[in-house]
Amino acid sequence: MIITASGRKVTLKQSFLDMVEKRLQKFDRYFEKDAEAAVTVTVENSRQTVEITVRYRGFIYRAEKTDFDMETAFADAADLIDRQITRHKKKLGNRIKRQDPALEPLEAPEAPEPQEFAEGVYRIAREKRFSVKPMEPDEAILQMNMLGHSFFLFRLVETGEVALVYRRHDDSYGLLIPEE
Image 1 (cartoon, rainbow, N blue to C red):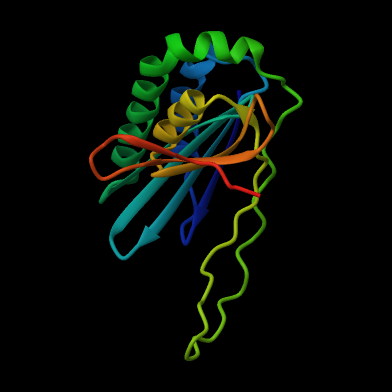
Image 2: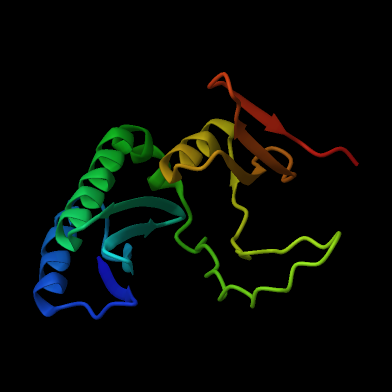
């Protein structure tokens, strides 16, 4: 697994980086060597937020925890990732084997500079680009739940049309398919 760690508003100590590498190497039993893990530490006031993102053949696992202690936040986020992987291991086992390793998500560009807010003008706080992969709706729901999002954009395997699954307020799911 390829591991990268970065800090926003903080310089990461070598002892923390060693702990990150040791803990994330345990995930090698689930993934092959082409998996990528990114750890980002952000400090706001006295609270420290650790975000872990693991990418493997189009699947994304993400966890974020905030605590007063960086190591505690990291341990909690790593536990969350571990639970996500083990909970979805059986479902993912068959899907990972049929995934095309050439399908890699596009990297998100840097966020655009914030624009001044004017009457009738909406401010876009963040722009994110990603590849829209062909999959079944149930697979898209699984990916959405692993990311912790309330919606997920994908292409239908049968038709190649762009579709969107979303979580409804009654904890059921919806599927949006645009008409021409």
